[in-house]
Length: 110
Image 1 (cartoon, rainbow, N blue to C red):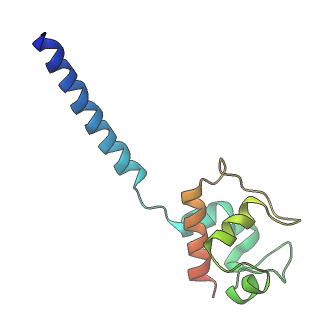
Image 2 (image 1 turned 90 degrees about the vertical axis):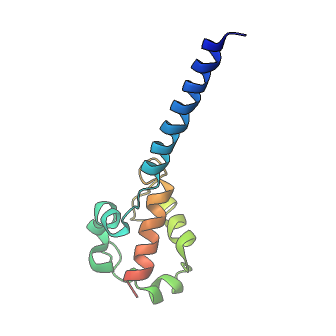
């Protein structure tokens, strides 16, 4: 058996495991919902309002009256909005960012 091959394989395994750890740490970084909201949503929804349709603000009571009760509902609206709102697909706003935005909306605009 070739000991150099085994040692080389072990080294490759260590490098792959170490690299995966760095990737996980980077992917695990916290996404700031407020920052993402300001980047993608605040142009039309400044302070939780709505410049296109002033009756459809981001206030929880208004959201619930329009069938939006939680994070999944907000993300669904982002992905497939009604007339007047830009459609944000997963390429534009990845799911983790969309979730952070939705959580920010629910927490902020009561």
